[in-house]
Image 1 (cartoon, rainbow, N blue to C red):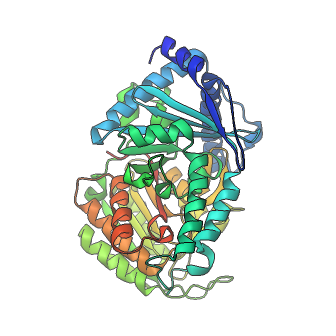
Image 2: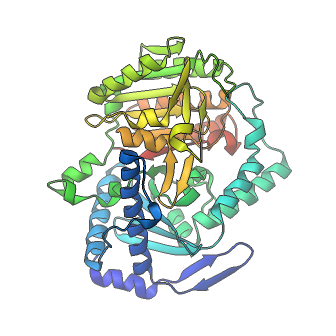
Image 3: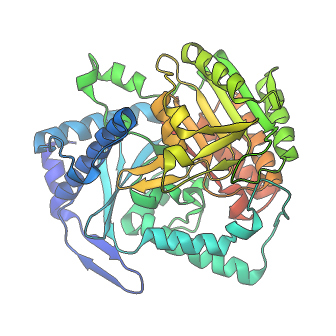
Length: 459
């Protein structure tokens, strides 16, 4: 994209404002909006790094170097080349979100040719997602990974209510020209840079303009860092080295260590009731078979001491750390209050973020309730997934809500099988597992759309 094309985008863009209960349109400057979006995410990137390092960061008062027109043009050029490189695994596009201080949300779609769609939408996405959670009946049907009734097929009134809820969220997050281009562009992978509560949405279940679920168009990855797309040449000798550093090598899952934890002997933990998870133990053994892993930690063997020792070994070896256990996300105190339950204790976000897996970057899978959630900021979520990423994980797979034992075991076994096949990225393997679960186990999105992947694009 050259400067003339960039200015042409500004001159021709019409922004459809999709409101709740009413729709209206206005003109907006997409170049200025995109500059603000990039500055917004760069600010939060720096603030998240500072917060992990020191424990403090005033997000509202942080001022980074603004993106100049020349810098924007360079970033879009690099971003286009980056998407072209990633398209070797299938045509790849990027969705950028910016929840503006004045209420609207800006949505940009980029591919290797540069920005191809821009919309500004109205509506409280957090409230919409809250309503969708009620419609999915998440809190009562799967309050733990314990025994719960699996809904294979919903009744007609439930289906209708669910369709309305998903359509409303889809209109907000895939509005107008963005949704139409996604449906027609032939993209097979979608990189999403979230803002606010966007990362907590079941993106895989959203509906495109042609009626298909987004997961039937493309695999989906939540980017942890805007530099995974735009790359930061200041930190590397050249762009190719920056691209390599911000790409997750899926082959490393099988060349490194394998830490598989399932159904620990929880014991008594003050303030929490943690029932046994026989389904999680069956899951971890099935996953071990798919991944050809011999060492599985269950019961009392799944202690915090053993787990932390294995994780420290991954600082040199990489590999995969897989947890099938109870999980809790704390939206108020995400590092101290969020945890994965292990034998005789809790593995908290604060402990995770202090790990230093900087030489080899493992895949972390948290097959546990709420493990992909946390506190939401303008730059995305801040919880266990980001703690793992800050510690050095290349990608993190986690859940968006409380998950059922049986349904999770079914889907994650197929995820491991697709990953072990060697032809898929992590995000691609998760897509296949979701589709197989929806088509062969349960059409209920509360089952098949419950997981997300977070981190750097796979290759």
